[in-house]
Amino acid sequence: MKALIRKDFYVLKKQFLLFAVIILVFRLGNMPASTLISIFYAVMLPSSAFAYDDLCHWDTMELMLPYSTRQIVLSRYCVGWLSMLFFLTFGWLVRFAAAWACGLFDVLPGLQEVEDVRAFLAEVAIAAIFLALSMPIYFRFDAEKSRAFRTLMIVLIAVIIGGAVSFMTVRDSAFGDMSLGDGFAVLSLTAVALTAASIPLSVLAWRRRHR
Image (cartoon, rainbow, N blue to C red):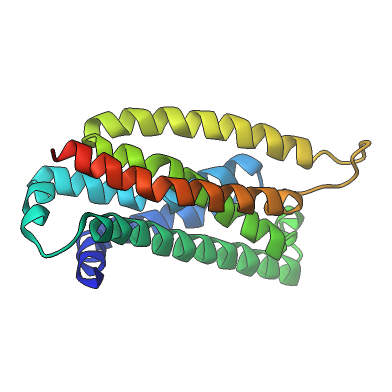
């Protein structure tokens, strides 16, 4: 299974650099929308891997390899989890460095507020939720069809989470001064539950596609 993971990262090395630059740009923004966009990009790498597989018909060739269906599916999940953790950590470090520099030189005071650990965990949970919802679609359909589903899913999740973030970040209201981190526990439990359901669904989707 390690070989499958290495294969994906080798193929996606150019995309990896591009996504890092995009996330860097958006993490310097000071709006919830910028954070959401960076979160979605953090879990987009597997979709590029599926697109490359369709282009070279890798899904047919991998049937001849000595890997079980579960190993093939889990290898792609590992690519998603590893890239997600890397990009989100990278984005948080960029934000932290920018806030430190702005505080040091007394410029752009809005960037001096850095999310706490709970906010980071909430971002990881949101990314994991999106990954869990999208992976069965990637395994069931080709890149073109899954792209349409993914776009619709991004819009729906962005609207739901964007509304929740806007609600939680209302200041001087009856709910007090809240942040994204205040919902990390619920988001984390949701992410774990959806991931536990997503993996067997992806296995079934892969088998159905290759019947």
